[in-house]
Image 1 (cartoon, one colour):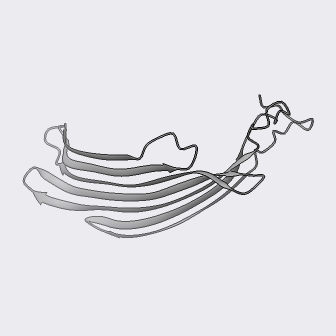
Image 2 (image 1 turned 120 degrees about the horizontal axis):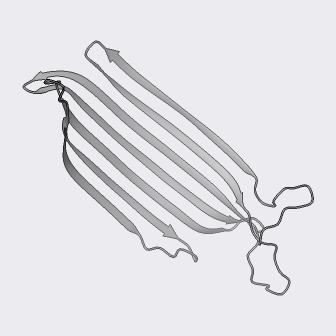
Length: 167
């Protein structure tokens, strides 16, 4: 239902992206610790079929206004404890939202909101005759919500936790 214009362009497929980030790490002989943040903004058009005069309720062009901010922390440290040689940790958090915007009116149709955090801690085993591995825990918590007249999914909460042994 989407056709190219005579100049081989598809209507409402423009895009603008802004992304920037920064990070800082301290590195030493036995490991490192670091943090970073990244912000992404994207605005784009969604291709749509030409509006039919037969169907006055057909939707016109829709645009997406998307924003995400992500924070990360990572660290690793030498560890001389029993069978373990290193400890590693990481935590990440992201806030995401996007709105579907009616291009003709500027009205926000549906909004999608997501927020989540994930973390991992692992003890790395020292090499013993060619055998290596890790023991650790990992967890995730994420919330997703859609708001608006065309929000067809219910709010979702995800929580995961795990313990692992990798050889």
